[in-house]
Structures are given as C-alpha cells and as structure tokens.
Image 1 (spheres, rainbow, N blue to C red):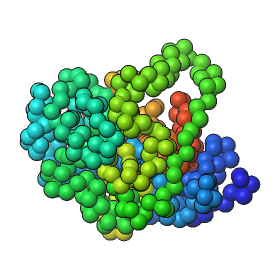
Image 2 (image 1 turned 90 degrees about the vertical axis):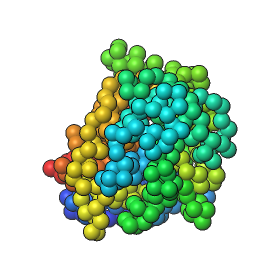
Image 3 (image 1 turned 45 degrees about the vertical axis):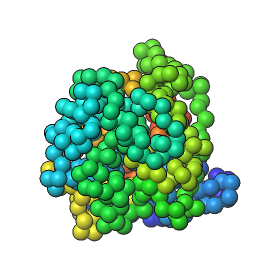
Length: 399
C-alpha cells in the first residue's frame, strides 16, 4: 500500500529533489518496486530503493534487489566493445568479417563493426524460424544471422536490432576475446567495479530477482496528443506493435519466440540464465549508475573508458527515421544518444533505455552516471514519465 511506502538509502545534500521525484513515481506513476542512483565525479550522491520486489510473495525491495532491464543491457554490451576498441583489440572501422569470417555470407563482407553497433546491418530479425530454446542457446541464432541476407542495404539506413544486436555483438566479442559477452563483462567490467550486474544470471541468484509486472496501456492517453502529425505517428507505431507480421513486432519478439516486453516470457529462470546481450541483463540502479560513472571518470580508482574513448563512443553514427520502430532514433557506437524519444541529461549524454522503463546513462559534461530500474513495466506510447521526472530533478540539483 502507498500509505506504507518507505524509501531506503541515502541522498547527499542538494539532491533531495531526486528523492522527491522518486517518491512521486510510486504515488503518481504506478511504480511497485524500484531503485534509482546517481554518481557525480565518481562519488555516489543518490542511492535509493523502495516498494515491493515480489507482490505475490510480499517481498520488499531490498538494497541488493535486481531485476531484468531489457535493452538497458545494450549499454553494458556497448561498454565491452568500446573497451576492446580502446585497447586496440578491435577496430571499429574494420569489417566484421575480419573477426568472424562466416559473417561475410550473402554480401555482408563490407559491413563494419561501427555499422553493426549502430543498427545499420539490416539484420534486425532472423530470416529462419527459431524456437525459444534455440534462441536461449545462442549459437543457432548466431549461425542463422551469419548466413542470411540483410533486410536492407547495410549502411544506407538504420533500424533497431532489438534482440539480434546482442547475439551479433556478443559473437563478435567471442571471436575477438575467446570469451562470451557475459563472461567478458563479468571479468572486465562487473567484477572490477563490484557490480550486481549479470548477462547470464548464476542460478543461486535467481530467487532474489524482482519479477517483472506487465504494464496496462491507457487508450485515453492518445487524447493528450493534439498535433495531427504526431497523433498519426503514434497510431502507426501502435498498429505496427500489434501486427505480428510487421518488422517492428517481429524484431521485438524474434518472430514471436520471445515477446518483448512480456513479464511471463522473461520471468523465467531459463531466460535469466541465458546470455541475451541485448535484453536479459539483470541489475539494479546502483550498478547501472556506477558502470556509467566509470565511463566518464574514476570510481574508486577504476576508469573504464578514457575521455577519448568516451567521445568516440558517443559520436553520432545515425539519426532519423528508424526502419524498425518507425519513429526517430539516434545512435552512437552501441549507445543511444540524447533525443526527444530517449531524453537524458544533456547533449553529450550516452546510454540506453530498456523496454518498460529502465534507463542508464553517462554524461561527460556533468561527470554523471545515472541508473533507474523497476519491476512495473510502463506501457505509455508518449514517453516514460518516471525517468523524465527523475532526470529533471537531477538537472535541478546539478544547477
């Protein structure tokens, strides 16, 4: 019950408005259980959690509660690739096929690593039917993607590779390092920084995960859109989402085998344990914020990306109409960039949102790392009010 809501954690003086915004998320925007965290100049200034992790079990959200964050996982995957590029182990402008020869099939030999990371490869959905078990295994879908023809001429357009991004980039990392993406991330990022963040959850951690809760769309929210062109776009996107044959729906569900977002599908220990480097990361806000803070400064003596590497990572690669999601999208090297569709702190911010509400990002100008995760999936077509409120409160605090 909201009257029993207790928030836990710490807020440094000057950041109380973030705590107020976090409370409003429960009181006004339907949050059930959630956490939010902010680092500034490598120091933790906000670390809050509250609500219920598992309503069925009456389990409260605890300090170390984690949940599945969907595409916020892509930020962790992008960190891994940019870390390899920084070390000189991976050339962003080299063909993917230099590291993964089988990828060159069907005219894909010229696709660069940079194009793969910015959703330009035209491989947003597998061309062959695959079962959920094959997707969770990883290797079968990687083999299908390697041998198929692109859906559009690579480099001429971009379209969100909602789930295939992870299998593609994960295989690239495996070819370069000999380690799976989940293992590389654990050993090179999560371990050194002490993160509660997994791409491939250990079995002994599954019982502590906060299960996702499906969101319920509000048809009346369309009444808030007064611009005819904007309303037409929202209706077009909604139609594509609900049409199983559309590229949007096929990409978001991998041809129906992994509906996304969908609580029942993803609240599955087999899904937790698999490595889906685009979508099944399990973490909390503290770990998301800490990871991004280490991309723009030192955190307890650890720095992931140098200033130069972070600048390369956030350099705009594509912007404009997205062939999959229909609306506008904007990408750097694996990261989403600040935009009207994915608002962050400012023009230099880079990170990634997750379906249903999760968000993590870094801002090099403010030296900020931000993280927000929740178990209640949002279902708004007009943007995520929970993160918008938190970011505006953070912006006010930094002023």
